[in-house]
View (cartoon, rainbow over the protein chains, first blue to last red):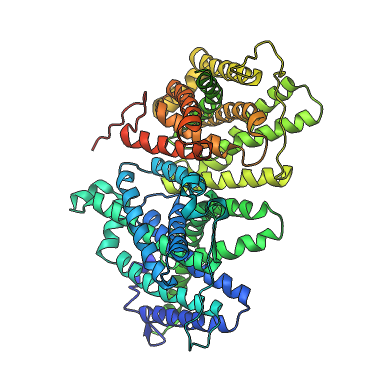
Length: 341
Length: 290
């Protein structure tokens, strides 16, 4: 794959009068156009699912920053998702602040929480970090149910959130509004993520993943980068958690169990590790596949997750995004060869 | 005082289970430097096999022995078929494969045996002479069985040529291969033994926590904590760690945090050990050459 890319510098080649880069922009614009039309053509349940996909995509982008790009394995991102969701829910429940103001607060809380968890996690590598975050994932529902936190968290009952309505004057129902509200968060966050990961910072993160010592020798402050990555990753996840709480209109401890964290891991593996577009593919997978599999049997969704995890690791470790990229490169080369001269 | 005594002793009994799980984890870690996230589910599945054999009318100890055999073979098979191809892969790949394995075994058990909670018999009659106000007969028997199994495992490694070969393969694969030890098979045997030890933990835990596909979730977490407390590359340490964690868990659950935060105790132990003394009480301090 790399040889293909080096022998055909993508940006320089033109296909049908446009460079590959412009084609990508066209693709993204088309995707955005579809995303904007979608809510007007879907039933309210399918719209709910589409909104969930947006929320998951944000989580997966955050997790991919940490695990894919920076090489810090987290099996416990469900915990940060829960913190974000509970921050939003508690703020809505206890204070009178408007729902849209809870999102940045949730993001900020998770940024701090992630940074604080990332600080000690600096000392843990590979399996050990996986272990610690595994423990975090398993313990999260218990902590949320803890009786001394009950005045805020509502204990086992959880918290019910009233539905956010579209601002007066907009011809949207509340489901459509929520969808656009999520879209309005996700697009800028993806742009920020893209710039972060494709630039100097992203290269530093990848360098730390591939060879921490060499990265430190090159003058990268590995400790700072690693804990900041943890913070930013948790922030993305927390914002998604808050949006997810608004969408589901309900938070309860048992929706943030171990298997939520595992779903996120499955999402980045299927979508593509260390890939930005992979977040979207992964989100589509973890939203729809369990729903479809559920119709077969109660055990089927997890069996399918497990089988896909192992099969992807063996057969296509770059995930769906990797396959798409490979196919695009192949197509571009074929198109290039067919052109005269 | 009597209540504390009771908590400590029943903590020791639970500790036996954690010790077995921790030992199983350590065996795999020593040989391959992988943390087996599917260890608990392997044990759970073996316990279901035992339950099936009991349902078929076999006497308990026959079913017990047959289950050990099943667990051993299943462990070897998993190593050969699933783990081997990713032996040298990056950590993330290995973790993902183990999590995949966890999910597959869990859902397989749910699919085959349903998610309803089942009672699992204890081989130790509840009015046996070795029962006391401090410990139920099952708890005493549990400690006894775990100790016997651990003793057998240690004897196997210490006194048999095969055990020696397995230790050699784990410590220095290259040299072992040079003297004619089949390292790949030794690793597979290690997985088999880990599966076997885990299944003992499963069968001993099941009468207490009841049999269901998620029964080992919490136990696995304590097994991790135990392995880390003792030092993840030291089998003796893992066993001792198991007992320490068992007592800590019970006492903290009874007097400090209450039963509903017990899993958080494991989380705190794990993170605490990793931060303060990552090599555990008896582990080797890892020195990397730059």
